Image 1 (cartoon, helix red, strand yellow):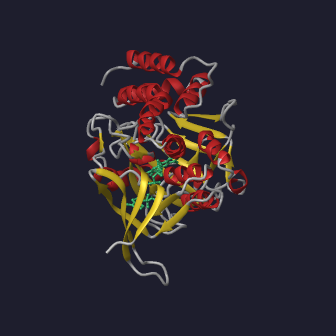
Image 2 (spheres, protein in one colour; image 1 turned 45 degrees about the horizontal axis):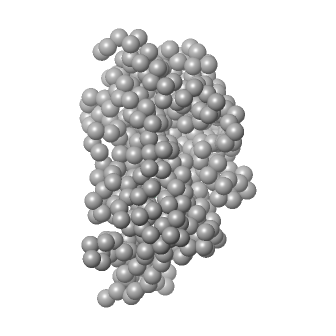
Image 3 (cartoon, protein in one colour; image 1 turned 90 degrees about the vertical axis):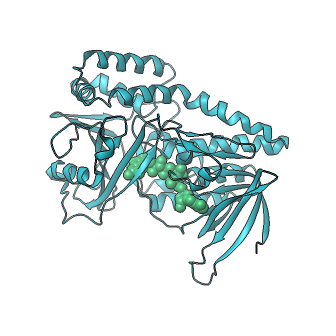
Length: 422
Ligand SMILES: Cc1cc2nc3c(=O)[nH]c(=O)nc-3n(C[C@H](O)[C@H](O)[C@H](O)COP(=O)(O)OP(=O)(O)OC[C@H]3O[C@@H](n4cnc5c(N)ncnc54)[C@H](O)[C@@H]3O)c2cc1C
């Protein structure tokens, strides 16, 4: 029942992590197939915020010009406890000092197209339904062509590949079929967002509200955001972490209603300006999905639980882990030796290990609402402290600055010590 075809690498999913993996492997001349179950342009529930780290990756993939027409912003406006701070992105030798807001509909199509230009083959409307096993080793996937585009018919085929990169997002069914699972002791994020028309759709700041509350007025460890999209709309949402008691009882739709109702009136956020019902999703953080690597496969992006626990940023890490995976797979193909894949775990650890550890400690500490409240209250009254926190949270500390681990541990320790324990 299957047609056979064969590639060096099969990538499952063409979101940020899969498209970046495909791009970097195709650049090096490998035969890469990316299978994507949707058709581009397709939407993805997201805040659409690109930090300097994400912009760096997009620039490296040759997309600077394609980004230019989109909403470029200078930094973060943080609001909390009656204070407002506008903080430009810092100067950094490795990253630009600006970000973009780009709807995922446009962004993901752009990067997937770039992977194809680099030489990758992309099948859309194609679902990887299960791993293809040969002698217990993963050698590709069974792919179902949905037949949902004009002139195409549904059919199944077996795709053989030397290596498989799993980039199928936060739910990662394919990853679970390989035995990957999320560590329950790691923080999980939950977020929801919607679009509204707004007269301030093209402001050069993204806005973050640091004292979100539930309907009873209790502080919650998370933040609300308002990101100008530049196309007449703003992206409004809120995100929360699973590190506080009772997180399972939070209804994110109600939280979104509460946030929309209390957000600054000037944005014009109301049921009348909404362009559609808000949608939500989960954010597996801090490298929480394990294992990251098997004898012939690797896991990247949300499928590997790569979201930054500090701020819920997942796009930059998806591009970066895709690029790391491509590097490692390239070495394995060049050496004709799958053992090279084992270095992926070490490279992840070297790049994110300590940072994620600090982030997990930090978000556990702010799981105590009193700690979160005191942190925000103290931070909002000190620009230097908040600018430093911004650099830590967006993983933008310069090498010449205090080591991020040491700095953040000190910060967390000071706040935990200072906060009245609830
Ligand atoms: C509400 C919300 C707001 C967020 N806001 C931000 C933000 O502002 N900035 C930021 O940096 N991050 C944000 N994130 C996180 C960000 O969206 C993710 O980290 C990012 O999309 C991860 O990219 P990915 O490629 O790993 O996965 P995805 O973007 O989920 O891509 C996975 C792709 O795989 C495809 N796929 C799945 N299964 C299969 C299969 N079996 N066969 C073929 N294809 C398959 C899917 O269709 C999809 O295209 C937000 C997340 C949420 C939920």
